[in-house]
Image (tube, rainbow, N blue to C red):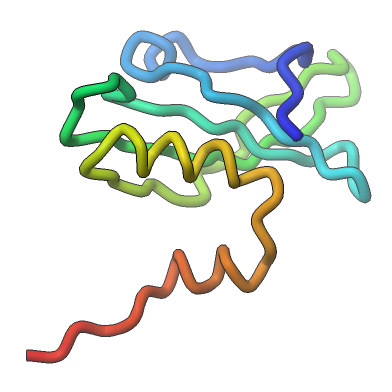
Length: 107
């Protein structure tokens, strides 16, 4: 489930180009989570990029900061990107591994 009431330090450069889709905090390790950002997420877009960043809680400020980018994914349709973003909080580890390591295409 996405949480939108978190204090997150996001660089202005990212916010100028990307839109926040949501954040997920680990139920097991609440000091860690992910931030989901998108570029081009419009209904008739043919080039949409979803970027997922690892978040870490800074103890002194009690806010999350971006630790590093985990993955960037491209989608050629709004519905595919939206389905991915909606399904991400409930995605299994196996689904994510398959998504990140697609079947090789042989010629």
